Length: 119
Image 1: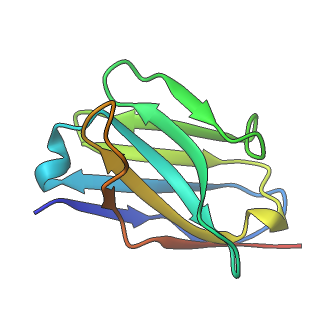
Image 2 (image 1 turned 120 degrees about the horizontal axis):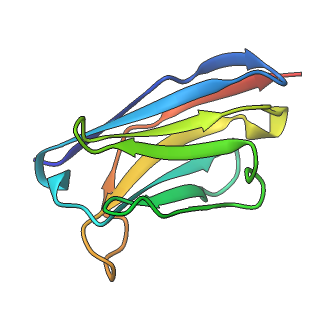
């Protein structure tokens, strides 16, 4: 059974920081990449950042570039999202996801963690 569990969400003032974690277990062990997505109220889920598990190559949505940093700890099988200089428009439910291979879609998803940024 594959499982992704997010943690670290909460309420923060604009300009503040939060660090999200995503712990992977089960069939997600042999994964090609992991990613963070977010979904704001009334909007579609959108890509935030991803990381290639072996090698650590990363990419970011333009809206978070320079403010967010994605990383992973292979020994702990955990991915992180350090979010700095948060803005009210970053308010969303943040989801982590994993895919097994280069040609696979993100087939494993966490339950989501709420991030609320007050102005």
